[in-house]
Image (cartoon, rainbow, N blue to C red; front, side, top):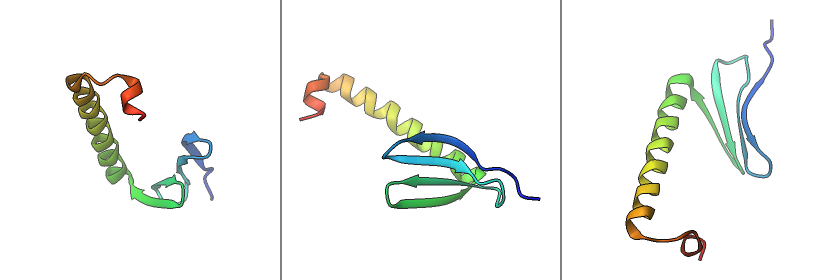
Amino acid sequence: MERARTVLADIESFGRIYNCGDCNNIHVQIGPVSLTLSVEAYMQLVALVNTSAANFEQSVAWSGADDHELHN
């Protein structure tokens, strides 16, 4: 019996993360790049990106850069 696809996140024109329901893996698509990860590997990726985002926020705060400087 085939299970339904579950979209976990979707940003139009950027990417999508979903569980197809059949292979017990998480599929990450960003532009032309597609990754198929085990649930454990996906959770490690989530932890990696969360840590990176937190460190980036701290580095921006420490540098004193404002939002305008980040986009130029």
